[in-house]
Length: 293
Image (tube, rainbow, N blue to C red; front, top):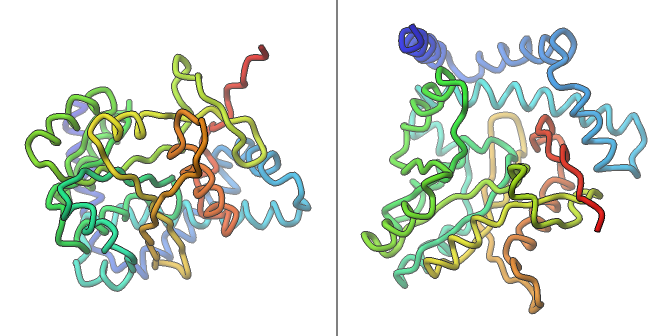
């Protein structure tokens, strides 16, 4: 029964994906009204996160960010479904990628690459960057499996548009080591702004005005395979267009155990502060509090 439901959902999404994106944005406008005003999807979480992240802002400013966030979230949903049926030419028009020479320079030296990014802009469209450079030939993405199997199969179908290797978080270390042995150079994307699982609440920093636990898996894996680290900055100049810029990561000399991860969080915070409405505020990012020593 579950398999039949998955097939039906994927089939329906494929049908919807044939609709022109400009028309799908009209669907997004209707979805916005439902999500924000009727369903009130995680509205309490969004408001708490915004208020705690930007205590210096007046309520009217926070309300504006909230409104624009829900509009963007609905756009992300239809844009992600559109990946099931959108031409390479249209993606090239809608996604501008800058500084891919940084990736090619590292790959030409035979080294693996770890690229950090956040749940910012449309992270499902990020795989489009893999078509914009000649090297490396192999690209991977670490992900946390979705518990809902129907939704999980839908996302696997959507992500299969690109030849990216999908690597479950639990098998990340041995998979990446094997890739190092087989290919030498490759690129792995890490979305590292989620809340760590409870047993991994060992590392804390100040992020968006709050004491925040952070994940260190990307940097640990990168060290293990001798990888270079990059950051992907994302901008949304207008609806349906994204600018994705690859940036160098040069942490200052310090005694920090995870300097690249901390630098990533600083760079991500700068991205978020530039246009807060495009980050995923529905995450329960600050669910856990640091235990007092």
